[in-house]
Each structure stands twice: as C-alpha cells, then as structure tokens.
Image 1 (cartoon, helix red, strand yellow):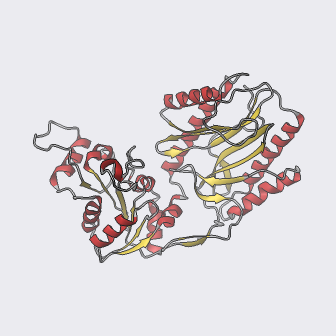
Image 2: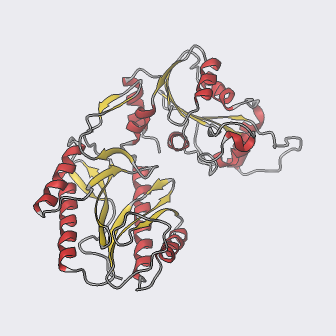
Image 3: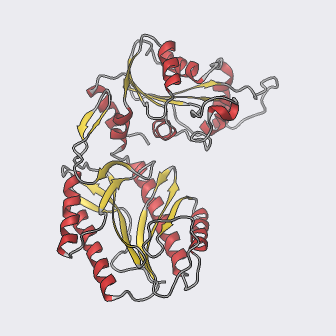
Amino acid sequence: MINQPRAIDCLQRYELDALVATSPVNVTYVTGYYSWLAGQFKEYMVRPGGSADLLPSFGVFTAAGHTSLAIDATMACNAMDLEVDRIRFFGGGMLDHSAPPVELPDRLKSLHTSMTTEPYGASPVDALKDVLLDASLANGRIGIDRDTLASTTFEAIQHALPDVQWRDASNLIRWIRMVKTKEEIERLRRATQIAEEAAHIALADAKVGGSLLEMRQRFQTELAAQGAEPDHFAYSARGMGIATESDYRLAPDDILYVDYGCVFGYCCSDSGLTLSMGPPSDSHQRSYDALYACLQAGSEAMRPGVNTSAILDAMWSVLCEHDIRVSFPHGHGIGLEVRDYPILVGDTRLRIKDDCIDEPADLPLEESMVLNLEAPIFIPGTASLHIEQTFLVESDGAALLTPQERGAPFLP
C-alpha cells in the first residue's frame, strides 16, 4: 500500500537512498508483510530475563522503488503472497531442511527457493545488513523508523553498518502515509462500509434492559461474517465517559454515545452515532442538531490547502452559535492505524520533525487524504451524544467515503 510516488519524492527531497521500517505497522505499509505476533512478541518471551522490546523485523524501500523484507524464517509463510523484490531470513531454528520438498504451488515454490538458496542471518540485524548490502547501500544515507526500535537494536545496526549515514525518519514515514493510494482508499472504504452495516444490525435490536456487551458481541459477529476483525465498540453510560467493558443495560430514556470500528485488509475504520431508546427530548434534539451542523461545517471547510486548524474553527463556530461551550469537535486521519496524521485540532504551535522533515503541526490538507470528523457531548449522570463520519479529500472539497446517515439519532 505504500504511496510510491510520494515516498520517492520524499527520499529525493531529503537526499535519502532508502527508508527502513521497523515498527510492525510501517513494515506492513512498506512491504505488505503482516504477522499477528509482530506487535506482541517480546524478547523476554523467548529469552527469559530479557527485555520487553519487540522482536524486530524490517521493511526496506529504496529511492529506486524497490522493496525488501527481513523476517524470521519461522514466519516465512506469511510472506508467500507478497510482491517484494527480496526477502532475507534470520532465525529459523525450528525448520528441518533435511528432506526434499514435495511439488509446490508456484507462490510457495518461489518462497521455498528464497528460504533454501541463501544462508540465514544469525539475528534480525544480520538479515537487515544483508538486505542493504544486496541493494549496494553499505555507504548509503538511510532514514530509519526509530519509534519502536530498541536503542540496543539500533546500536547493533550502527555497529553492523558503520559507513551508513543514519537519519531518524519516524515522522517522515507518517508524512508519507498521510496521503492514501487507490488501494488503501478502497480498503478503508470497505472497512467503513462493513462497520456501518454491522453496527446498524447490532443496534437495531437494542431494547430496554439489553446489555451493551451483548450488543458488542453481535457487532463482532457481523464483522466476522464479512471478513473483518473488530477494532472497537465503545459507548457511554449516562454520559460518564467512554467504556468498552462495562456491562451497562439500557434504560427507557437512554440517549448515548456509540463509537465503533473494524479492520479490513489491515486498514481501520472509525465511526460513531447517537443511540436513542426513544424520541429525544427537545433539549437533546437541539444538541444533536448542533452536532450535525458542526460536522457539516467541518466537512464543507475541508479542501486541499486548508490548514487543519481551520476545520476546527469552522466546527467550533457552529457549536458556539448553538450556545454549546463544552464538547470536543475534532478530526483525524485514518489508515493502517485508527489515527494517522493529520490530526485536526487547534494549532499546537508544535512541529512535526525528525532528522529529515520539519513541518508545522498545523498541516494543510492534501487530495486523497481520508479523514474522520467527530463531535461528542457528555453530560455526566444524564446522557451523551455523538456523531462521526469519514471523508475523502478530493480536488474540490471533501465527500463521504461511504454513505453514513447521521441526520438524526439512531432509533432501534
């Protein structure tokens, strides 16, 4: 899913020969490789007394547009559908290569060839070194994702490749990820559609005395039926903050915040609405109408070149017109994580910077960004309201990524 033209442009602009992804999400972004253990397996789980650092794998993207992967050979099968240019392995101690293989399908045959024609690295760092030597980058200028990379691992990388000029590129990779490819947009669209349908099915059966935990389970069942995995199903009990585990049971006068999302093709969705167990009171209806107008104003302000803080200004302006002073209208990008850059809040006066990039945090919008807008109201002890939709930034404005009806609270 990597946005290759944007990535190559950034590499040229910052005079880099390659990017090395180290966090699981960025390895997936650069190479397509995903393992369910990548974000969970820590050193102490295989080496008692060791650190809590994640066991690393690496994805490499070069200025020529080539991709490579360095992974534990035990997880090789996860890479059988990838179109990377080169895979280098490490580990693989539990693999017995003494017997000849049976006849294999083509995609497994090529993977098996990679596994048997070259020696494995003794460590992840050795495999990364082999990848970079293969690409003639032993003396290169390379940006590396430092966010989740243990300092000891980075020191080992520096020692193994002493002539490489390393640059922290953690924020540069986030910058590249902001603008989506057609493939990523379609996966995000499908994730949003699936979650919307599953939530409507689960919420349609809401009844007085019904459990929100049971409703969450129904949501997850519907997601699974459409090939998606749950990300979250959150709700508010009488406006007392946000919960995912409390077994709240619905009352006849409940009107409450509901926020939900799933993961499809590694891409996240994030949506929200207001569940009302009966016709809203006049005051709640007025508040909801204000939230809806707030989101409309925010979406109408979203155009390429407009700074993120201007979206918030448009949203707050509407809420103030309706005499609402306590809320959290905002927005955020969405992609392989439930929150990508840009984050649509007020101007923090901070900068998005690393050894490569240095930009104001109040970013201008760009075409092909996928952004969420949301606005909740919490009234502790009484009620909560919520509205959230997902938009695609186009050349002349923003449009809903997929239909999400929010003109009124959701009635079971």
